[in-house]
Length: 296
Image 1 (cartoon, rainbow, N blue to C red):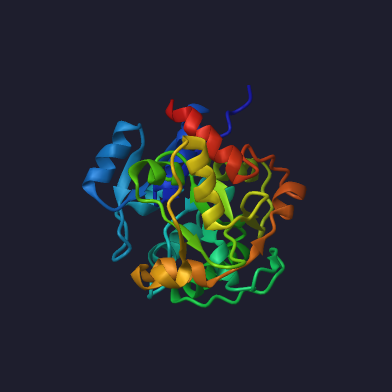
Image 2: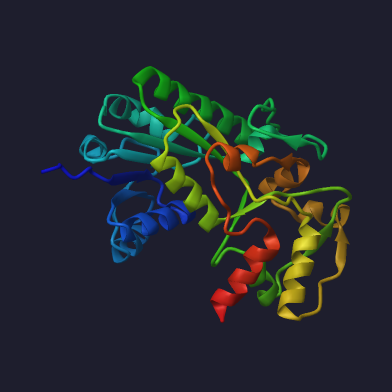
């Protein structure tokens, strides 16, 4: 009689993307546990069927060795801070010695590439982050990959583009009357539907490639104004006026300004050719149409 292969994922940071992945895996018979930052979030996760421990990065998580030792897959979606990656700061030793772990994923960002003046970047392009946040991401990526090499773990880095999906999209902004159409000549954003991130992670789990880095974005970078205009067309509502970037930049948060400071076309060729992912939403038009359909 064959012993059933364990399928248990532990997630550092059960946020938007990780919870979407956890839900899909749970429906497939996996056990999933992880961390969150507040009691209210822990209660919400418990209602979804996920055991969650409190971890805010300022101190070690209680009983972490037990959680890691019980898992054979590990995902980190917690961003680094000024003092580094909080997971590795407190728990790198626990993770390193967990020999039963068969797959580790680290969620990063395409922001590590910095500004390329609209040129294409791929996973072989030099990273040249301009914001402190992006520089911290580069350091964290390298630390996770080094852990994998030193401990013999199969670590993968996923550089995510702008994430959208249910309850996090321009359709909701247009309906709420908060969407702005911003014009910055030649500026493009890459984006990715949360379902396609989940599909990418599931594919990687099934076919680990130690040390791999993947850009996770759709096939068609587009301007912010174009996407908002299309959302208005789908909803059959008037478009907000086109506002010059210079008119609105002073009102933006520091994070928003950093997004607008970088301009690049992110290639997802490796995602298709090496990992073999077929995107459900290869462009924003298909993704937004599906979101409207889901809301009906």
